[in-house]
Structure formats: C-alpha cells, structure tokens
Length: 187
Image 1 (cartoon, one colour):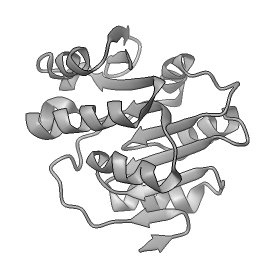
Image 2: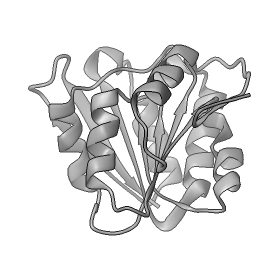
Image 3: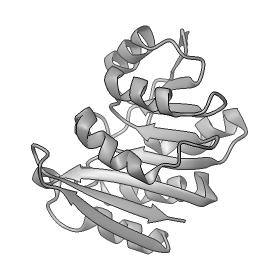
Image 4: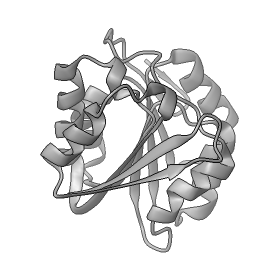
C-alpha cells in the first residue's frame, strides 16, 4: 500500500522500536561526514524527524535522493505528511530489506545513516543488516551509524563494522544527552 510517498510493507521483525533520537544540532555533527556538493543517494534507518529531514533535503543537491526506512508506521506517515519533497522516499519496512528497496531505484548508495540500537537486535539480524548495508553501498560508500552510551552494552556494533568494513573510525558527542558514539565505516 502506498500513502503519498510512503511505501507500506507489512513486516514483522525484531528490530522495531529500538532506535534512538538525535537532535538537529548533533545530527549536523554527523553530517560533516557527508559531501553535500554532489549528487547522493542517502539511506536512513529508522527515525528521522521532520526537522532533520528538512535539514538533509535543504543541503542535498536537486538530483539527490533521501530514502528513509522506518518500521514505525506512525513515524513514516508523520514524515510523509509533513515533508513534501520528491527527493524523499519513505518506506515502512525493516532495514533488513535495504537490498530490495534499493533495487527499486536502480541505484547504489553513497551514505547510510543508522540510529538502530544493534545491542538490542539479535546477532544474526544485526549481522544481516550490516552485510546488506555494505552490499548496498557504492565502492566509495560510507556507513554512519550512531548509538547512545545508554545503549552501548558491549562492542557489538564496533565488532560488526570491523568485520565487514575496511576502515572504521569512531568519535563521541559528549554534549548530547545522552552522549553518542558515532562510527564512520567505509567500504
């Protein structure tokens, strides 16, 4: 079913309701890793506020695409009803379906931004998401996941990134509440 620019797919997976929010101020810090001067295909896993979506779209080129994969139907519909831009593509689906979603656009991805809490996802599903993300990226693509310290129980995400990506950097946003750990994983 499609509502405006939202593709609604009924999927029942274990990654629902395990994302964290990020303020626009701190999201801008994450975006310093994105080259907005060129055409990009950017995918966001999970919650993207109207404010953040507008910030992204205002900085992207006219021919770029922003694909939001959101499992929460209410959040997907809210974003679709609040942001009217042909470059925004919203899919109510699981991040595990990134491969099928990207095939619809016949594109490879420049950047994937993720607010998923990988420590709350089963190890098999988490690894599947990271592997499919890597495959969806261009050769120069970048995976930009972030997680709050309150969700970092171990090194699950870092270990997955080191296993599937050739270079992983991490930084911290200590002024965020709660503090965030940002990763930059390059294909």
